Length: 184
Image (cartoon, rainbow, N blue to C red; front, side):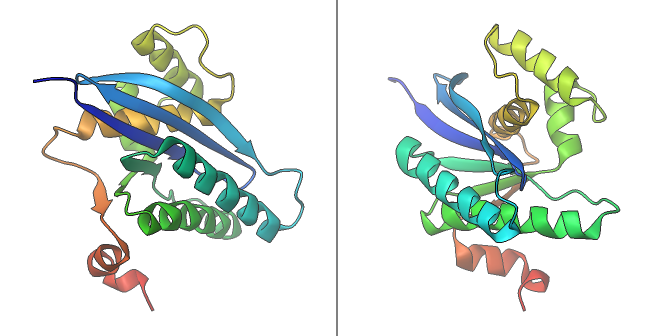
């Protein structure tokens, strides 16, 4: 049969710190290729932060050529401005992937935590602990945003053969078709 391989880029979106992780599925097992964070806190202007997210995401996709993108979906909080800014960052990441014809899969934070720890309300530290044990890695990144991105990628890997997959978009037309209420 030979070796089958798939690369998944996991993103934990944020406008001050965005986590990313790239895993490769080799013979049905995930292998960590890269993890890290994009820090934009030095930019005081929100639009400059979005520009940095755009540049770094495009670079990650161009350098690592992922087959699929898994991203944490929006969460609903009390701070409307923070949600709006987060939505913009998510949109930038999704747009770059869709422009490159990379399918996008969204996962709710509770679903990601449930997939990794078995507990939907697990803390970031608990998620990192479970991932460290899962990969038998002592040198996972210290940044919890990076381990959250790894959790999103692993969640997607675990869902690949699941009958209840996350939302997938194969291009802008598919996104519009599946989200008619989100397009004005």
